[in-house]
Length: 177
Length: 285
Image (cartoon, rainbow over all chains, first blue to last red; front, side):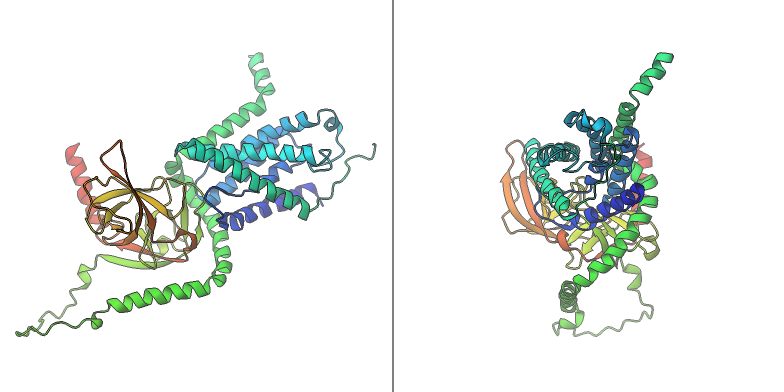
């Protein structure tokens, strides 16, 4: 399937799942699972930095318009979209210059551990920034820290389950390896 | 000049990121102004339709619960019927009402409109509820919203033709006034953003007698919500050492987790009260 079509379907699916399934689960006030930002993590490697920022802005803004208070998710999405390319370079500076794979996955990141760290860092930053912006108005640091940590753990678990359930076909970009 | 262009080209992504980030933080802070201008018109049209479709599906799963609630509300209404009360037989002189016009209609102050909830959130720090009816069905900005057991839910902040957005009690800017049923002391409602359904009542002085299990009702000091609507039951009373007030937390009688149908309250005196207030404001300026 065309990468663009695939990503458009993915975009709408992630938003629908987030708004109509995960937002309806009221597990505990400390734990709010988020998964929609996995869309940003799964964006193709070869996408430019600027495009990533604009896509993240669109994603965050769509989620925000469903939640009727604009800004929070937009800000968090932008932050991880800005950090993502830097993290990818940090994890695999040599191989990714001429990568064989399209998107970040367990295979393309070279093992499950680097992939989990990669996702974990982005999830933590996303949740941290999101809850910080929210907690700013209430101003309770311990509440913020515990909420961020617990939510990060749950979101990571959800992401790993998603990763196991929906195995993505990883195409080679070139045959010359 | 050339250096400036080089600088912009080099750090284009950082600048773009900072600009967009700044824009979103601007949205968070100046939320209400922006919301009024664009959000209600465009975003509501789109997301409202999606929410509407979803709620149609969800509605079938909650039919049983809705039925139970309606039955309960109906029982309450039946119990309020005049026919249920017998007047003591002391009316020795019998008067005939000579006015043929139905004079009651003029004195109707509140009118209730039913609406269905299509979107509801409790997990965020600022929660909103979207109703499936808007200004085309008489729902206006500033109307109070109660659930079917007459527990206060919130106030309409925005209404277009098809949908209305309600700022629920679980919102940091929601400051309705509440009253203790027993003593009559009035305070301001406030939500700490943590536990849904638990709201704090501020501004009750320490000389008031408050106990766990006391009822909090609406004070009727605003035009949106009539006096005596159930707000909740006191769950925790602490005395604040720094001020002369109690720290009271109460459990809201409206259950924000499963709102299905609500009533919007239209106060026919809102306009005239507004006009008087405007006049006073002009005089004092």
